[in-house]
Length: 217
Image (cartoon, rainbow, N blue to C red; front, side, top):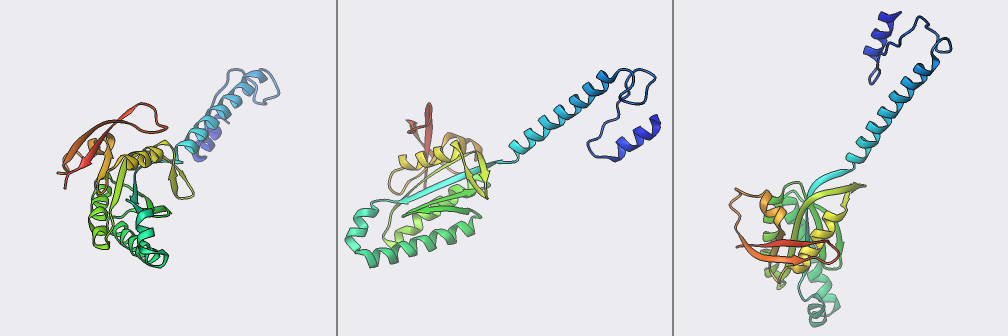
């Protein structure tokens, strides 16, 4: 009986063989409380482990990139609706080509802004630099901001505080500048990328001060 129980437990994933004191085999005979307590312990431990796994699998480490066109309203007024739509289409196509080249994932566009994610901060920086440089041929100037952090994953898109920080970093960028958080800078140590310290900044809606760095051309 005992060996049969051990064998079954060894063949069932997640199963556990437990021997309780006493001569009785039936759970309703003898010390039934020990039997019930062991079942409750097993179910509680497995529920807690499964809940932790379900929570953790919905988070991912990612580098987020935000870009937007500098002075877009004035540019649209200067060009007129038709020419501005054409330029915006060229801008979007250019960024999408660069996202493919640097293995980024487009997550959203809002007007003239792009939101993308990368699985590596160095490629994200190089993509942002390429964007700020190549849009000049269109007569445009963009600013870009990056942050790396653990993000919530929902329907293939990332969200959470790390995304908000990335968006706020982009807001602090100057025209034509690629600005990153200190987290990104630390992660690419040894990549030969050069940075200029832009000092500490308070990011709207984000607690504390954040050290920001500009990418040197």
